[in-house]
Image 1 (cartoon, rainbow, N blue to C red):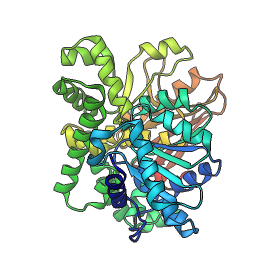
Image 2 (cartoon, one colour):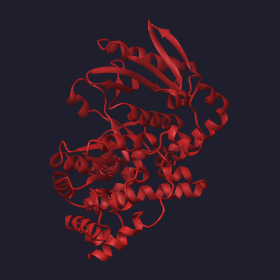
Image 3 (cartoon, helix red, strand yellow):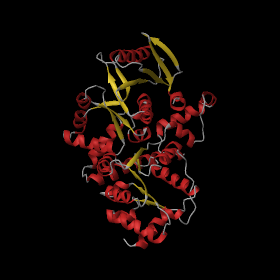
Image 4 (cartoon, rainbow, N blue to C red):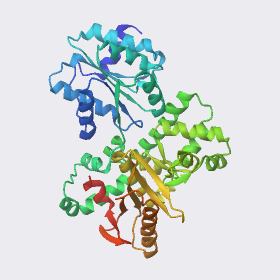
Amino acid sequence: MDKKEIIAILEDWNFWSKPFRKNFSRKTYEDEVVHKSSTNEIVFLKGVRRSGKSTILLNHIQNLIEEGVPKENILFVNLEDPRFASSLSLELLEEIKQAYLYYMDPKEKPYIFLDEVQNIDGFEKWLLKEYELQTSYLFATGSNSKLLSKEIGSALSGRYLDIQVSPLSFQEYLQFKEVHVEKPYDLISRQIEIERHFEHYMLYGGFPKVVLTEDIALKEAELKSYFDSILLRDIVARYKLDNFRILEQLSIFLLSSISNAVSITKVKNRLGVSHDLASRYMEYLENTYMVQSVPLFDWSLQKQHVNPKKIYSIDTGLSKRVSFEVGKRIGDMLENIVYLELNRRHSEIYYFKTAQGYEVDFLIKEYEKITHLVQVSQTLQDEKTRKRELRALVKASDELQHSENIHLLLLTMDESSTEMIDDKAIKSVNILEWLLLDD
């Protein structure tokens, strides 16, 4: 591509000669970008497509401009612009930079932002060159976990810091709706409004654009578009698959199975495919962040590997849109939301089964210490349900007794309370309180 053609495309995405458009802020992520960029390492934002990675970078660009960085010192490149599609290569990255330098002539070290960088095969080689020459401040986004981990890890080890970006948490969702909950009184005074928002959050999820869309039909159309885009652009095109039907069936099956344990054997039998194909396709879906799996906890890594894993969706709205069954299973969707929040707060998450067969939804491990056992239940109004959930926590903590001071937590839509069973304190906490007020 020649310089004029490239700069014409770049002009559409940059703010060299036009005002900056207003975006919603996601302060936690934006603060993390500022903090990690201060090291001068490459900053990577990774996460599912349409989760808001680009907007976070655009807000960082706006902050840089407000701090006095000249607009011409900033280059934003959308590597999914269809005008680049036929030229995606390492050579294109260099051509883009040279066109930018020629026309914009930055007087200081420029800030370069590469959006959806995994579209360039070998992108890490170009980033490594730029990093070693110290000619640019570097930022990038990507939507494929395995690709980024493999290529960044080998070529850029010790030269980058990453940030995992997810769709909106419920707290962020409320901020987008201009509802602010900072203390327990706020939750009480606006209870009905917040519960109504939570129902919408559970049904339509937290993708930013979907949250900002009021029309239900448009929300659902947007979610279906995301589903198709993830499959077609992040899997079919990248891995050159020729069996879209099987991939689609697997996706719908997994998104219909949220909060349930699923084995490769179950998948292959359900779809009538080989063990190898079922395993590969599940891995592809996890690489796109669409679904995530939680292993059964065991101190033996081999046992963790062979047991079925529980499946969760990156967004409950995505699950509901492609699987009509999910909308009937409120308990599973609540558990999925709790998983997503736990994933924001903790790095090691498992589920657990006692020797007697009681299952605990989540076990949290930090380093070599088990810190939390968490059960999720829509309500404990039924006495049988209440006893079963409490018993599971007690039995699990007994089996894990060598791990001291485990927090036993039961999350429900009921009122919060604490009770003692066998000298163990079990906190029952309202899910909304936990999502909005618990640190």
